[in-house]
Image (cartoon, rainbow, N blue to C red; front, side, top):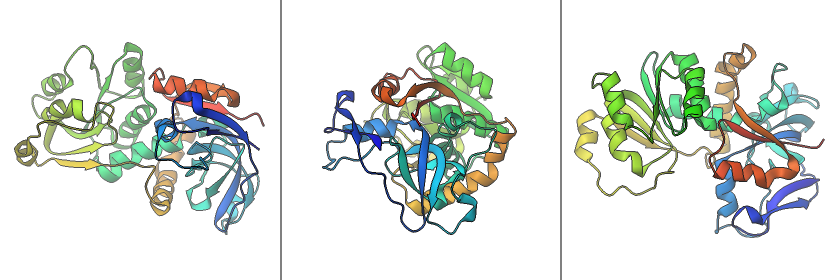
Length: 327
């Protein structure tokens, strides 16, 4: 089968299309014939990881496709079933192995391209907002990087599941417009105004209950100023740096802020399986009802993977970048 790996860790130029044998599923696993795969920032970070050793992995953690063979006891996932889900590696291949307990059945109302745009961003957003952020009905939430895949997913989940008041930051007017269409109450262009000042103006100084933070260090003081008492601040990225020079612990204590950090990719298989099951039960029906929608920026052919990575790294996308397989 054809797949994408790397010649060595580095820039987009190291991406390499290879021919390899189809993987063989073990007990409890599915062999998936991949129809589409999602591009994620974790893929570009893996590509650049200097600690990687040969043999280098097939990249990709998010796919949709058709079950080719089922080595599990779950009869709902027999050959021919349309599924989507997360894999540890191998998503950029014509076939991939997936744990059966991580597979989510893809409703007929959704295409394979749409299915590949769901698992990573919606599961990340759901985990961050509800398992860690503990967002309650009608609370206020600040979502940074509102035009990203996770950002567009988070806005929809917070609106549809919690009727939240949503503050969304983005650096381009078109990303702000998308955030408003998806349910954001207030959008803020972080290049033109300080989001903490806007939030405190709108909330009359009370702040937000949950922060979904992709940025990290450079947003520290403004995030801190945006927090309400008992706020839950969840850090899931470090686009603005990882080291904060001065930290006011007294302010964290005074407001009783819970600061949590997380990454989904390194989580255990059991954690991802549990998250997938809960998401299937609570959120997947909303896709069938068109209350949730995967936001797709572009769909590229399998051969154009380097271009997909370029779009991701240049932050050009609003929503997901998808590659489709030639099969």
